[in-house]
Amino acid sequence: MQDPKSQPAHIEVFQIEVLPATPEQKPVVANLLELYAHDFSDFQDLELGPDGRFGYRDLDLYWSEPGHHPFLIKVDGKLAGVVLLKRETNPQGDGNLWDVAEFFVLRGYRRRGIGTHVAHHVWKQFPGAWQVRVMERNLKAVQFWERTVMRFAGESANTACLERGGARWRVFTFCNQL
Image (tube, rainbow, N blue to C red; front, side, top):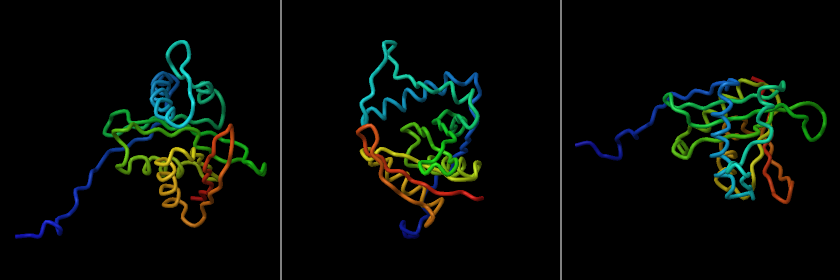
C-alpha cells in the first residue's frame, strides 16, 4: 500500500486568456469594475451614484487614448476579471512607465495562481518600466503583489510607500527588458 503523503498533490489546470477588450465589450468591463469597486469599498470610502453604480470616470480613455489598454480575463472560457493598464510619466519625471491602473480577479478564481499568471503575461507583453500601486490597508493584495512582483522581477524590484489622498499605498516598481 502506498503512503498517502507520497501521492502527487492535485494540481488544477486552467485555460487562462488575457484578451484585449473591444469597444463593444466596454459594458462588460464596466460591470466587472462595479464588482471591483464593491470589493475595494472595504478599504476606501466609495459612494454610489444616483444610478446605484460606483462608475469609473476614466473608462472611455481606454478606447480613445494611446497608451491605455483594457483586458478581459477568461478562465476556461468564462469571464474571470479585468485589467486596465496605462502609460504614465514616472514620479521622477525621467520618462514613461507602465501602470497597473486596475487589476481584478473574481473571488471564485483567487488563490489559484490565476492572478499571478495574468500579471506576468501582461508584463511580458509591454517591455519597460512598471509600477503597481496597492493600498496598504488591503493586506491580501499587498501580499499578492509582493509575491507576484518578486517572482517576476526578483532582486531588481523596488518597494516604496506613498501617501496620497489620506491613504497609504505600497508602490512596487521594476523594469521588464524581455
